[in-house]
Length: 261
Image 1 (cartoon, rainbow, N blue to C red):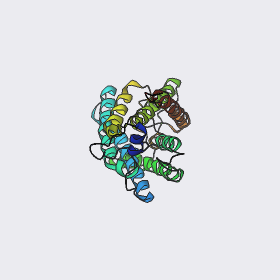
Image 2 (spheres, rainbow, N blue to C red):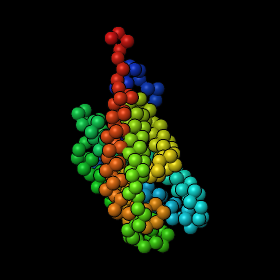
Image 3 (cartoon, rainbow, N blue to C red):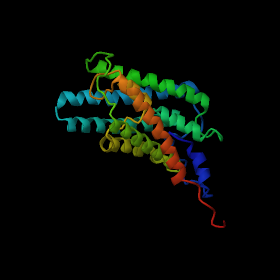
Image 4 (tube, one colour):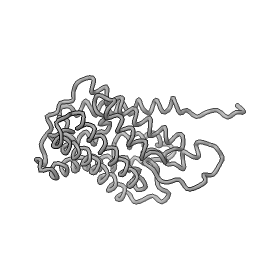
């Protein structure tokens, strides 16, 4: 979900070679870059699977219990496990972004040195993520006998929910790019999935933190849905959160000085 591990290792400047070849992780561009169609397919399928997990587990939870707390627990646990698996599986192909703000943030931070996604790749990734998210919501509805497309009526336009999206997205960007800056992207599958699972509970919005997923969830009138009228506010706050997250990365992980300076 960020710049390449090799590039970030060089930036760390420790002058040592790694003991073993690092495993690809979200944001890490594989040594042998797959063709763009393969990357686009990975982003589409990965985002579709992620939304199918989120929506499907939400439907299943509401069918099994009327306790909202248990519903959210089941939904968050399924998302944690599903996201971790998808990042591990598809990270070596596309970086496993599954999220336009991650794609755009990586392009922005690496636009000068070319270590991340290019503008051309970003222009392909984002539509693939949106299409995948919509397909995932439709698939989840189909699996549980729900109408394939039914606009959500779950209004999420309250101010405190929008603040929650800023916090959730800023934290996600800080985590991903902080791991890149400290050469620890190998922990991304566990770290990112764990963060999203925690953010389900500590943010008022239950941490959408993803414009593509937000759009996809508008297509299902189930537990995980969001009303179309709430989309603009959520996506706007997610973009704001991404900017804030990058600012925090620049502040917290600024390059240190040599001991001789």
